[in-house]
Length: 231
Image (spheres, rainbow, N blue to C red):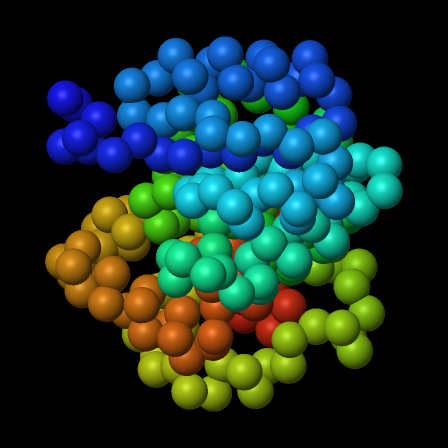
């Protein structure tokens, strides 16, 4: 009866190691609010079978034979869906905490990434966070990744600073705090405003910058120079 009143989060696992998938599935299926509905062993298989399911969150390995996690992520988040449902949120799985391939996956549309050796409770919280509409940007490893790549990225590949021209001063303040990993409630406290006001600002920033989620906002903040690596 609980599942009727509170629909479960539908999760897909994409990883070329069956043992890894089995371990993740065991942890996820132990939770009352989420379930693994489909698994795939590589990116090509994922693109063949995942569109047939209503999936909320995909845990995607970044390094797989054939079509890797980056290309598969971009295809999944941009492909039209017959059901009319929004594209699934993708969380990239990696064994490297500073992996430029992971940054590419975030640019391709992933909502964040987790290390494969992360604690089970952290993985479950990431799934819930992404499903709720936020992105996994708070962990320091994600910020280190973005700072690392932003510092070495050629200027021609960065988002031009003019992209921020439509933002108000207050929206720029909010964007800086998002890039520093602040939650909405922490931003509200920092700026002495209501959390509902922060949510309104975040929505407007997302719309003005054409960003999918907070991860893309963080990337934009670094690429435009609004936030400097190490600041």
